[in-house]
Image 1: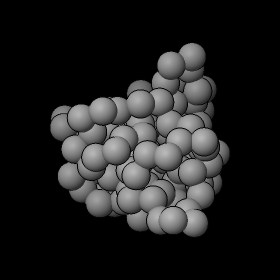
Image 2 (image 1 turned 90 degrees about the horizontal axis):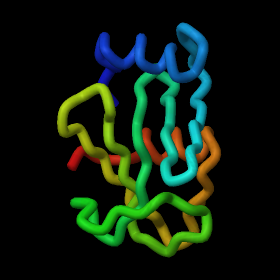
Image 3 (image 1 turned 180 degrees about the horizontal axis):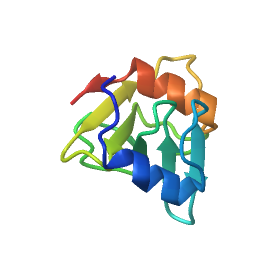
Length: 107
């Protein structure tokens, strides 16, 4: 995974109320879920039935989507896709999302 851009750090600090941290965090809004990654980068998270994200939905632990998508908000057009395994966790807690991001591939 690439290092966060200079834009990401101030944005994340403003959203999370702290300057830096190595612990991933989840920001959950009514219709959106964001991951503040362990390197300080900010990602919007979706579930999708295709890796190109044509049918993005809000992620859910109950989802049966095949892919979890991570869209980097501080980088133009950076998208990563994680492919769920048959027995893989679909949880949306910070640690699970960070593991999925780390195992994802650039799309």
